Image (tube, rainbow over the protein chains, first blue to last red):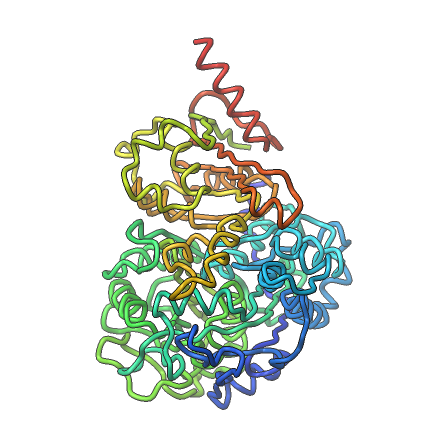
Length: 388
Length: 192
């Protein structure tokens, strides 16, 4: 493998998303400008079995589909392909890879099968993330390598890094990276059992924060070698990941694992902490996660932290889609030169990171953005974007 | 291209006598995590000799967490709902967390779902200098309950390889079958 391939620049050629704030990237852009929240009470989760019914739903409650993962991911990939059509038109299908990020794929099928409700063969097949990835790749003209990444809530960032790696090592010239997870009783029951939901809805970095709000989304980016993407492009400049090696469901209190991932990302991008213009936090709204994130950021950036915000008060925690959709928010922020706010943050907690943004604010420069995620199993991820 | 070497290889299957050495908590783990821990333990790696933040974990989870999903969701009718202790194992990457905790490995991790291999990814990390060594684990778990649901025969095994810059033998380009490599390593150690 030529050594230069390791250094080749990878850029984002197109984005697509369907989330709690609406269908399409423009809906996301509007929510970013308005600091809007898509979190709502959902009647189907308004039951004693669930700690909260506040969720970030991207579909009508009675949509009735047995394959929501396919539906959500398909919408996002179509939109991202459309945005990237000029780039993709010049690349043969066998040189286009596909990386799917998901934690539960089409878990709807398991609920249906367990309850002896109707379930199509396709929906049953999409219980398997690798089958969902293969079918999405085939349907969207990606004839190159196909992977299904699943690393808890860090999946999306790892999937984007995987896409960039495939391009850098010459396995593909472009890669569609899609993230998807859908709302389900399965996941709601799990977080309820862990007492991890905020009955009032997720409030990242808030003094009164009590937990997360599950969300659902399909999100996709098309990555390509930078010279194939029209300038000014946003590049995937670096990434890092780590493990706390501490606890299966709780983060390391001192933030050392996340700090290690951030330092790895800074090193791989070749930038200093002082060059980062904006940080998009994991910001689940759980007391421990937000405090851990603050500790990690203090460890890397000291007292002079760049502006920080979190998107889970806007979209909910979209699990395997989170890293992808929150990266798209960073892309939009960089294009608009708008520092995003933190929807539903009312009064900033004392233990919140310095520099937390409540409301969006225009800025003169937003060239370097850092995106963070952490997850069960102690995993941490950091991704750096550069607006060239 | 830089050569990447297999240092050790091992495998585990259900009913393995090695389970007894892991203590009481072991019984509460999902089968994939149990098998992964047993396979890695048998590699005989002294992790104290390595910088733990420079050891990666690459997991190939052929069946994802479907077996744990099935077991967890069967508990939905219980008082208090399905088990919170099982919920964490409904992630395909759960075994990574268990391996990291047991061996205090703080390096990067990756989990790919499906029948593919992670050896190419681990070799990529080593060539880029992102890690000094990488634990590669492949898990296959189809319990009888899951098999009935998805129409597949029951199966359970884990295979572990340890990759570094030197060792038993070089990993060939496009060599991806971890079961075969484990068998070859076993034959090599038996012969020597």
